[in-house]
Image (cartoon, rainbow, N blue to C red; front, side, top):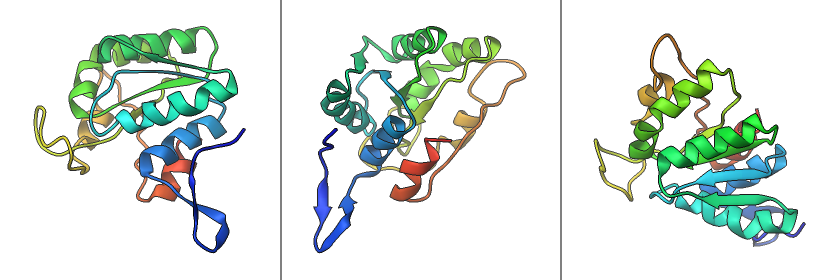
Length: 163
């Protein structure tokens, strides 16, 4: 499969990638063949990249009507045995709390990419930071905490999503 990336000048084994593209490529390398998502800044680039790439793999990307539907649709894929995921940022992660609680109760291996942005509520949609760590760790109801992997580089975005 040909992947749309820019080669690094003079480095045939390297490429230029955004962190979001590295997450998308890592998900593909991990065997993901299904993504359900709702566009939200700054996470939309993951879905946009997956739309361009997944069709070449005979895979599916579903743009849902909201974040709750994205999480539930991704969960439906996992129930069906497909390795899939959803992607959002802070406000969307808040909306997914009840769905993530259900995934926890059902012991489903849900993968949610949270491309963090700064500030409370809608915050500053074009500035990224690590303000969602607590929400990611303790986003579901009851006695539950999720496994959170927080990459520190673009290279880690590619490799860590495969864990």
